[in-house]
Amino acid sequence: MSKETVSNALFSQGGLSRRAFLGLGATAAVAAGAAGLAGCAPAPKSEAASEAKGASGTSAQYAWEVAPEPIKDIKQTVDTDILVVGAGLSGCACACAAAEQGGTVTVVEKTSSWNGRGGGFGTINSRYMDELDIKVDKVNAKQHWIAQCASRANEDLIVKFFNHSEEASNWLLDKAEAVGGSAMVGAFYSHDDVYAEQPGYHMLMIPKEAGLTSTGFAGAELLHNDAVKAGAEFVFDSPAVQLVKEGDKVVGCICEGKDGYVQYNAKSGVVLCTGDIGGDVDMCKAYAPVCVEYGQPRSQYTPVGVNTGDGHKMGLWAGAQMQDLPLPTMMHPQAFCWFHGPFLFVNDNGERFMCEDTWVQGKSLAINRQPGGEAWSIFDANWESDLVRGLPQGGGMFWDSFRPYGSDLSLAPEYFKTQIPEYIKAGNAYEADTLENLAKQIGCDAAAFKATVERYNGLCEAGEDTDYYKKPVFLTPVKQGPFYALKVGPALLAVPGGLRTNIDFQCLGAEGQPIKGLYALGNVQGDICAVDYPINVAGNSHGRCITYGYLLGHELAKA
View (cartoon, rainbow, N blue to C red):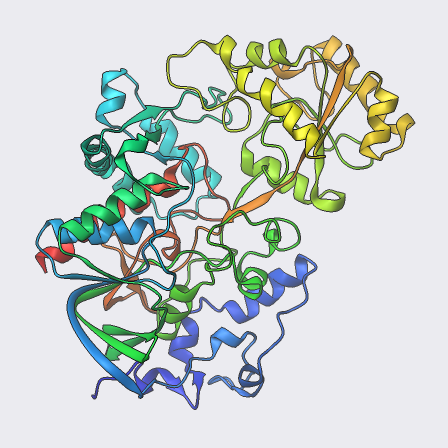
């Protein structure tokens, strides 16, 4: 068969054949139902999608279900061994690892630079953790991970991260130290038995003298720089548009360069590292509808709008299958104020609606269902001591500042003492001498709000929350002014789900068979998370990008 973007056997008159459609995981029906349940109208069909027919004779639901015609107008052909599509964290990790092992690597990237975001990465162990005598409870960590993913994640992939993250993390730490940096191991995880988190979050500390330009996660830049030193070639402003297949094997990818289409032929494999779908509203409606109304519009992903599911689409067109739907969302309650602790939460009507002692995804989803997709964390002048008293059991992201392991718990409020005035100045928080005045600033009925607070204070005094069963240690009354209200709302960081792979990171076809030559890493890869993003191993998204990229890079360099 001649070299084509996708085999004609997979497509029928511009539409997906039955075999290729099954690679979508029957998403047309499932996604339409999910969008309906969420109150979202179906995404508008493109003209091509409206006319395209599948093997069953039904119209395609979404434009990306219709594979584009194979591109023939190729201006240039480039040969390489390993083609990495996307220069984010997983792409840079894979490219760096492969190049350091002698592989011939080309990285194509749609933007004008490598990309990194977020503050740190999670791991199951590292030499920094050894030095601090920090141990992760692997049984607890792994079982909580599975439970938070509703038992729908691939346990073999998770175990692979557990077994290899130490080696990969030390590899990255070596790179940080080589430029004079180090890492802080965070101690802001929850010790709660229900929402147990683990102490493996590392924040890289890179001195200015190192000359890095990172405004996000510095690890991506370190890996990019070392990949270039090891001989990897990066081609920027070159968005990938189609995979190239010969028979049942992916042998390359076509990118749109400034002078036309460039076909990159990859002898050892094509690795999709193009990020998530969070920047494509229609894909979110189809695959992750829970985030559409509030989380997706408040996206904090950078660069803005580049995470449009490019790798997902190309993989589906090549016959890859999607993981079970809906895709998991990584939503954190940081759209307005980052600090809110386990204090009383009320909605815009001044009503309590949840147990506030929960993980960040749980908070986000509960708030997402409230009017306006926002809530208010309510506390009084005793908030500092209230916060510190609960930290031996609680903690976790947004409960206290990003303090290093072993630091004094009493110092936890120091950062937020400076931030609360800034929140007030930005109009996202209020301070008042009375509850009535606080209700007025929030915009809710003062009588209803005061009744909520009085009810909550009564539960605090009784030592038992019979409304939502918050742990007694976190029941802190709201009695002594000044009183505070900090706005809380969910923001979408990413949709960490995608194409199903085996434990060797090969994309799987509709029958579960590996698609030769096609791999997926990062948020294009599916089944590491499912339904929700498991925060119990904080930073695991970055951690597995580093770990899986490290492992796959080594394997492809041997091919």
